[in-house]
Length: 138
Image (cartoon, rainbow, N blue to C red; front, side):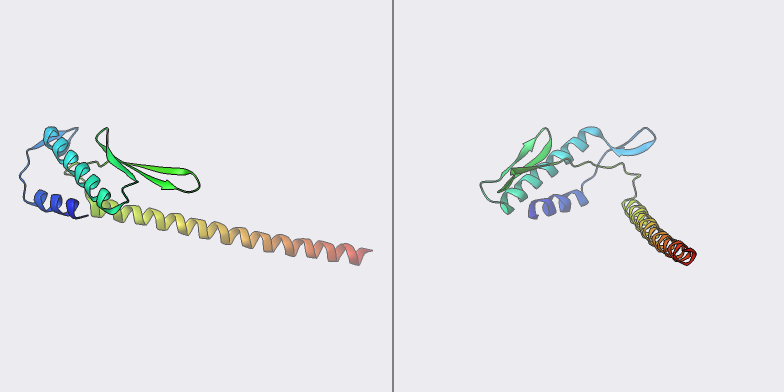
């Protein structure tokens, strides 16, 4: 990822024009286009270095298209579409919220599985009791 790393190093010290769109601070759209194009080109260059010559890596509709061979399904194609977020976007907060959501989903799934296991156990006990009562009645 040396090309991406080089681009990010350059972007760290580059001055941009800030405007406002839909109430959010953003980098001027023409500058955003330049950033995205540079990132797409850097990703393409890095993928080409990392993959075999037989793999397809190229720019497609301002995105990165990567197609790798697969012995079972012929090929698998990936489309990578980088997006520059608004300047108001807090990546750390977004990641933290995402991790919290995943944790809540995992906890809910674990609780659901525990409830299901408890229900199965209760149902088994109820069936055993009913069978015992039926056997006693006979």
